Image 1 (cartoon, helix red, strand yellow):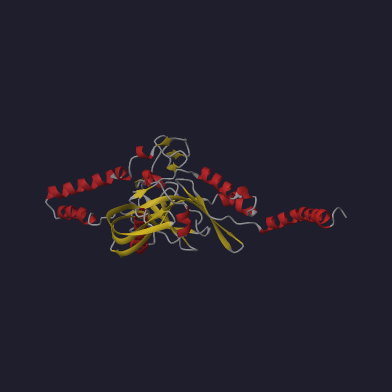
Image 2: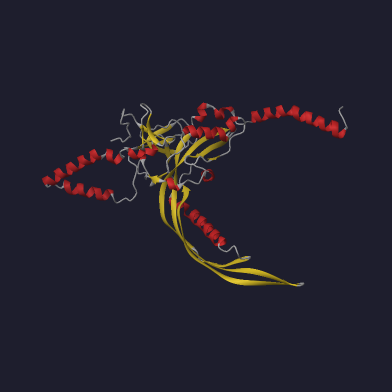
Length: 381
């Protein structure tokens, strides 16, 4: 049974409008809060009631079917991770670069976000984990286009094709998969610090150095340390548009995916463990350093600090994205869909640079003439 969000006025499909933060209908213009929509689980209640009626009928007949019906829900609950349903999502795969994106059943993919190929093949979604959290888009496509023009100076120095409508239309709203790590750490550092005092009596200067044993024992917890879970995205680019405001993170709701895409994670949470621990080690060192600023010198004798990843959650973060190939190189426009922060380097048109150079030649010639006339020759010539 296919699940989609329908307009109560005209029964057309609803899509999430980031600019309005509402589910909107393109046909009658209705706007509805995502929180006011019936969940997919509620829509599917009819099929669940049918299954329950069949189970009750089997019980009344005393058949074996009742025992089997009772056992099935238990086996379904053995998996702690909730999976996407084929009734609510669809997966598109790029035939050129192999990229995979997930979206709701009403959203179609006409080109690949990553390589621009128009060949996107829909296929059945199998055993894909649902996110635990989502940060919805706050900037819609109109705002993303405005930021794009500002970012590339309205195309004054970029190739003409870079700011053409057909290229701008390819700016895509996509959710990037992130692993969020909760870490508990124990700082256990022993060090030696020194303080010096100087006393001047007449012509005599006395400097005294005092040595101190420094002990730092402290429990420190970090919540939601982020690392992206998609190899298709440049880690540096993703980090450049961080941070995201976790105060606006919400439990995952399929309605926020309507009209957007979500990149499938292909990097496991375990693969980032070393990075997480290295990052936490640096955090601990910074905290220790900030607590020992008063000492003139500092020498760490022993560091028995430990850290443990106690929880990992899967979240989707909003991202506006455009890839552009120019002169054999790929340029990327990236924008945080929540904060509007932009990253990337726009291409520079060689033709425009050459024309600017030609335009500056007369100015440069006149300047050289002026310098030679008044400084070297002492007047015009």
